[in-house]
Length: 144
Image (cartoon, rainbow, N blue to C red; front, side):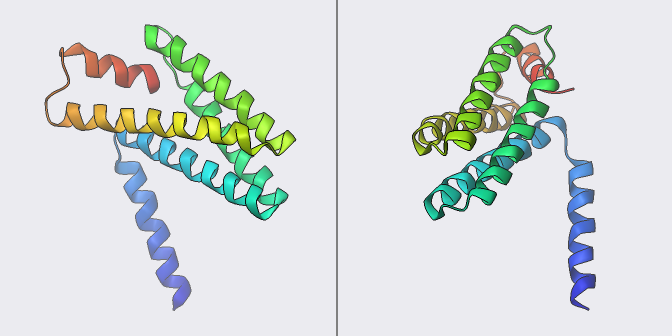
């Protein structure tokens, strides 16, 4: 019985992901990235290096996906590419060097970037997105 409840939850969650628009999926990726960085922090505190490596690898995979889906015809994409490259480099340093200082440096930056996308998405949804082509350009720059 308990397994059926979990299966229903998974099915519902998968359906919700399939129904999300591009901006919602982007925010979901950023939320997961922030979550994995929090797990890295907890792993460093507990000295659980298996958890650290797993969380860092998941963070790197999310950053790779975000970078791979950039549409380079938009100028902001080059800037995002540089940020993702920097974040990946620093997460690699966290993973290899078990360096909390590097994590403390980039986590607020990634959180701020996520919050910026969230605010932009909200503004677009409320019709306060500036020029008509600006929201479309921003969404296309970070989407497929």
